Image 1: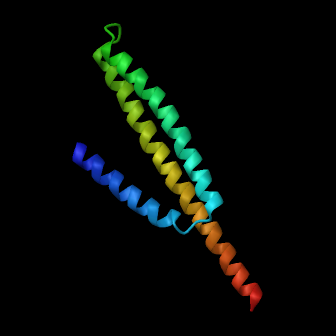
Image 2 (image 1 turned 90 degrees about the vertical axis):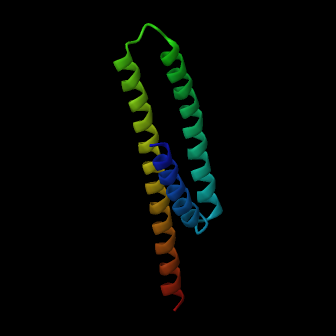
Image 3 (image 1 turned 180 degrees about the vertical axis):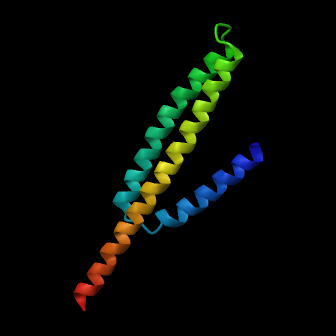
Length: 104
C-alpha cells in the first residue's frame, strides 16, 4: 500500500512538474502559495491525528474514520491542485495561440 502511494505521488509530481515549467512565473507563484496553504493545513490535521491516535477516549473505529478522512482530504486537495494547474496551462496556451493569430 505504501509503495502504491509513493508511485502515485511520483507520477503526480512528474506530471505537475512538466506542466508547471510551461506556466508563467506569476501563476507558478500562485500554485506554490496553494501548496503552502495545503502544507499548513495538512500539518495541523496531522497533529490532530497523532493526538487522536494516542487518546484513549476515541474508539478504534473513530480513529480509523478520522485517518480515512485525512487521506481523502490529501487526495482531493492534490486532485484540485492538479486541475488548477491544467486549467492555467490551458488558459496560457489559449492566450499564446490568440496572440499568434493576431500577429498574422
